[in-house]
Amino acid sequence: MAVIAAAATSAPDSAIRWDAKNAYLKCDGAIDGTIAWPSAPQATCVAMLMCANERALSAERHQRLIEQIRQVPGCGEP
Image (cartoon, rainbow, N blue to C red; front, side):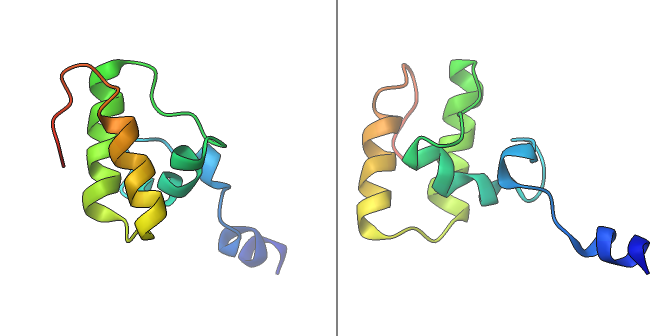
């Protein structure tokens, strides 16, 4: 029984890799500053654009994300 319970428990969002299929789960925390964006600018841009396109965001969180995207050199608009 313990194995089934452990398998059903999901990893915290911070433990999910940015290149994982469920990376969109990290978006809210990254936008809010509780989870770090990837360290390389290109990877940061890719993650931010993924969040803009794959995650349903509140208007406020979407605006904060747009502002963050504009601070990454070479990262275009979503």
